[in-house]
Image (cartoon, rainbow over all chains, first blue to last red; front, side, top):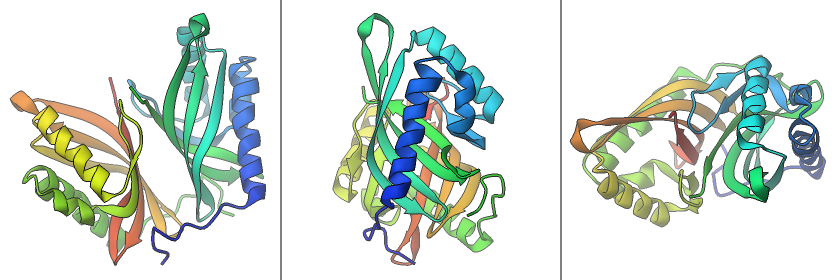
Length: 134
Length: 134
């Protein structure tokens, strides 16, 4: 059993794969409003816990959530920055910061925890929760 | 590599240990304001991501956070309910619901994700993030 203070590094290849998924979320799903790209971002049974709403599960509900978020916030992009990442069996636990570009050129910053899993050879978000800093 | 849809159960003995930790949080740390009990709830390098504030790390900052939260909310208890739990290497990822008893007999409900690790033989919270449902 590994003590909490001895965190081992996530392999560079996995970090690179995670970065590709995070960029897909920004460049395809949000910026181009290609919501089907979310199938490649979230696992089939992914759970999303958004502030101000109940937990949702699965691709269809997640797409509907982001469709409404893009429209409601006039969201044009989401830059994701990994702050910490540590291995967790077949997954990775990531703590990060998201900068959301919204209406009027404003940027909303939130912090998040994503539990990653590999599915169909891709690294995807399996649990996704965030909240505001202020 | 285990596909996301094949979640294996967390052993009953671990669930029981997690329940003891969650009850310690409610019964000792919050209800009795015995903040030193948080040393047995959170790992040494635990990170807490509270809504409306930046991430904090480590026992001292976590105790100060809860000291202020207890005073600010007139918090008298926090009932924690595990909604989902799945193994993650040497840890467990828990999705749950917390009912916070606050001033005037009101109850605030939030949802949370806790990444658990074993430290010194006890199951403790290593990453703790939550947000409101409304």
